[in-house]
Amino acid sequence: MTATRPDRSPRVLLVSHHYPPHLGGIENVVRQEAAHLARRGADVTVLTSGPRPGAPGTGRAGERADGERAGGERADGDAVRVVRVPAWHGVEERAGIPFPVLAPALLPAAVRWARWADVVHVHDCLYMTSWAAGLAAALTRTPHVVTQHVAVVDHPSPFVGLVQRAVYAAAGRRLLSRAGRVVVVNDGVGAFAVGHGARRGAVRHVPNGVDTEFFRPAASAGERERVRDRYRLPRDRVLVLFVGRLVRKKGWELLLAAADPAYELVFAGDGDGSALGGRSGVHGLGALPPAALAELYRACDVFALPSTAEGFPLSVQEAMASGLPVVTSDDPGYAPYGLDRDRVALLPREVPVLRDTLSSLARDRARRERMAAYSRRYAAAALAWEGHTDALLRLYEDVRREHGRTAPRARTGGPRGAAYRGSGPR
Image (cartoon, rainbow, N blue to C red; front, top):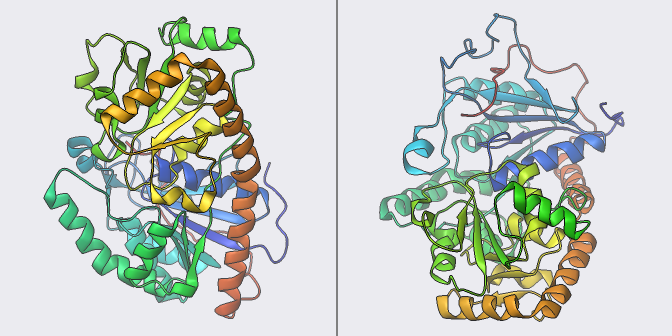
């Protein structure tokens, strides 16, 4: 049921290159933001990519297959409107880089929905959806907020690194310099944003949230065993879980190199997992939907993510909410969060250190239990989505006031024929 919206609650256009059912960190953040904002009374539309043009069941941009004008599908209990523009996903299919190339309908859709909105909230500067939304916000004089999730991501291809830097230097600088507020999750990304044009006074540190009811510890040993049986995992071994795409920045190859007889490794994430096949004590499960992933956290004993340049990744937050001891990289992005380093293992990205730490944890159940209890307590106290939503609503009110928008626009419904109503990303 859709929440009742107060008179002063905003119309929010959230913009993301992907949205569930596509799996990934940014899309999960946007979905949670959309759902929690709607519960607080905001009128929320998500603008994102959909299937490629001409895919089965699609019509022209702005139409359903039967020709009826569509204002977007409804999601999250009918509280959130999702507008999907047809896109080509070949870059992700061929190179593993989630960069949808959207149809020309993107810009008209962005302009129509920006005109409808009180605030445009763009997620990351790297994508076509972001560029179109930033231009649309400027054309319609609608204030916009940017959440910058990361800085330049380390990639084995020098060309990909060059493209990232060029995009951030051009489109990224325009988006960040014009933003009423720039949301970051750590000081490193904040410095990156300022270095690319964001006003220092506009940058705000807002931690991502985690659903501490959905991600929870196992209720019993029996529940853990049932989940292990479902995924054909051994009942009698210490299981170290990795969750993330199998790409270089996530450090999955470091974890694989740190394999040891004291524990078995479980990898959940998409990408080329051919190196996992046939190895004793290594289980590659591929990409899993959120419900299955939540189960898997409950079935394992330790979470390990030796990633780089990620700050405080969502998967670490989910693992903590699930009551798992966490072993991860000693990233400067953790500094603002005040983690107890005796209860969270923050390590250099070195295979021997990673192996020694995991082996020690595998043999020390009491230490695992202390770390697990801390993880759950910390997540429940510091990472709830309600606090994140409070912060966003305050930011929206601030930028509306600065732009002279102290009252929301007239409640006349969404624009006609604004965008394609698709069945979800490929």
